[in-house]
Length: 450
Image 1: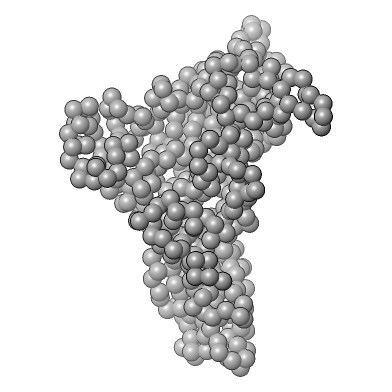
Image 2: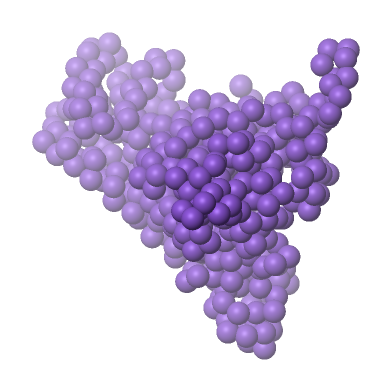
């Protein structure tokens, strides 16, 4: 194996883009597929997505939302029903024109988003006010032709996401739903991924095409750029009218329904990598880490190994009884030093080091990934590891909030905006567009709720 194959070879501060790509590939979260614009999600990457999905499902369920499934092919004739909406996606759409050697007739789009298909079905399912509210979430892939450089989790032609679509009898209820979902997104991202976010409303120019308005959740990345992390849209009756999503009210009068749509994608994983990673590689928040604790045995002989492993296995079993995800690195062909670097690259939150001398002292060595602090922990204190993982989760969010605050300027009007911009000493290096500018400004992209 060449030196270039081992570890991260570029600093996050020197070449952020290359650093990010190396972390994704070398931490084995994903890899590039043979087709341009597509990536393959590896088990650790998919495990993080499954963790997020599980959390979202639990919260959605408490809000009366159930999961469904939609096919990936959408007839062009359906897409034409809401031309303004579809026009925004048209340059990115993949089209299916043939089945074998035969033309399919009405061209089929590979789903860029599912509003048109979902609402065609909703118009069949909804008859009366008794059928409302209808709240369905779909865990799908979406496909949008990648016309710029592919960047795993951030810019790909196919991506994993969830898209929710709800239907309501009254406008007020629909608008409340928009905000409920936005709050679910915010709490999940901050609690699970330890990433602080700002919630707000998109400008008219940047709202979702077809929406009355778009609310958004965004975070500042270490390179100074804001990243859109998720959106929740109030669609009003902009889709219910062309797709005839209507119902008979309690007076048996036909009404058009009020709708919302909302979604997050695996872009959340990309944000997590950027916010927490360092020059050693990935740094995972404990709540989403596929492995929360890795145990590395240290021994130089079979006799030493026979001393270490019985205690090591005892500790592993003790941790597993408390639902901690733990792995023993028993690879004989590798040195402890290599293993330390390997698990740091993969971002495992806690490493346990244990050798014959540690057993003599009735202790283990704990190494925290996020700040590389090492502490000694007695055998009688093993139950503290769960609390330590919780502390790491909280500290990672606290640290991320502090870093975000360094790149955030609060302003009140356009004059103040110009004044603040002029005083930013790194402006000539990063560019105005990289600033996270809050509150009121003629240049704002997001009007925040905070």
